[in-house]
Amino acid sequence: MAISTCIKCAGHGFELALLTPIGESRKLTIVQCAQCGAPAGVMDPALGPQIEALTRQVAAIDERLSRIANALQD
Ligand SMILES: [Zn+2]
Image 1 (tube, rainbow, N blue to C red):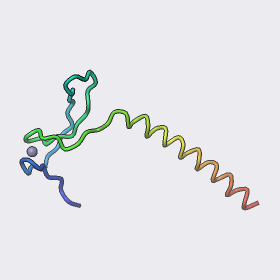
Image 2: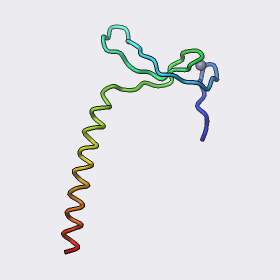
Image 3: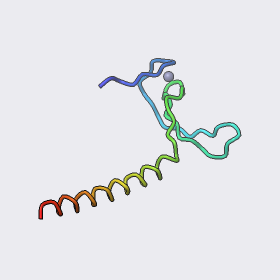
Image 4: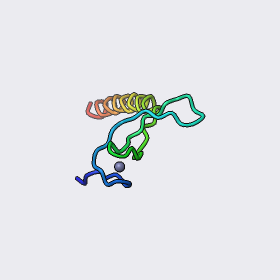
């Protein structure tokens, strides 16, 4: 697998940092270069609950598929 490289300083170390955008009260978690601080990505805090909801939906679909498979075997 390729090694992630900072586009500014070519460093290979990254860290999580909290950043409050100007005019916002909510902090964002960003991935930044550990050497120069150049941001490499943002972790959206709204994604956690959305992923949990999708996980529940997939589990429900899986359960229904199991019931259909069982009904077909009978
Ligand atoms: Zn860097």
